[in-house]
Image (spheres, rainbow, N blue to C red):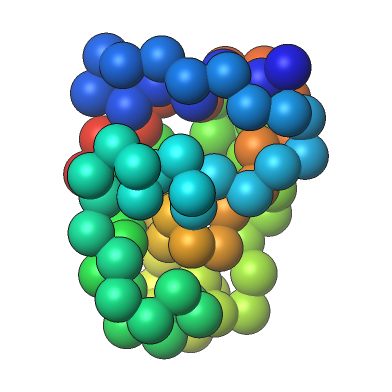
Length: 84
């Protein structure tokens, strides 16, 4: 199991899972859920290497390994700490 920490609240999720539902439950705002609007942008504070690589949608919006779209991320394993 991977661990996602959002503003000091910890969530366990299966390795390889998308993080969007956990982020939405934690109060991160969402709009399009397709990587177009940028509403669900998060800041990765720790563990960016435990997320999958940037996809085309994130690259088109200028995201980096530190700034990601939570609707497009999956956690590979380990622990990732984010804020929004």
